[in-house]
Image (tube, rainbow, N blue to C red):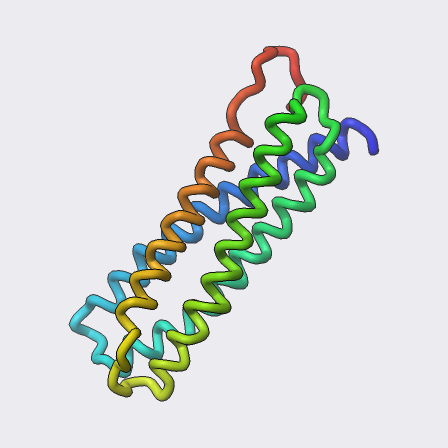
Length: 161
């Protein structure tokens, strides 16, 4: 793989990491406003959650896959230290694992609890919802750290990374 391909890979990884932080933040801001708005009743809030969250997780999965692909392409990029690359791969793996775990073991059970929309919240809903908020905050925070590391200028001014 030539240097240009490695540079394009790093650009893709930087873009995808940064895009996920922005997309997740925007999603949360809009989502919170929608579900706390007086414009929606309980049924409307449930519909919003059932429609929006699958897209949230799909977007995150696609952007993390692009990050992995970009980092793999950038593996031997001039100026990208092995330590920095391993840190980025590790953080991307942890973020992806947290997102997958949250989807499988928190979101899917929550979605069952609000189906059909407008139904009473069963016991355990609040605990799962708080767990989802915590896990998502951690994974987006770790992704922000990864984006900062990926976008941080290299030590050498003449480096290509």
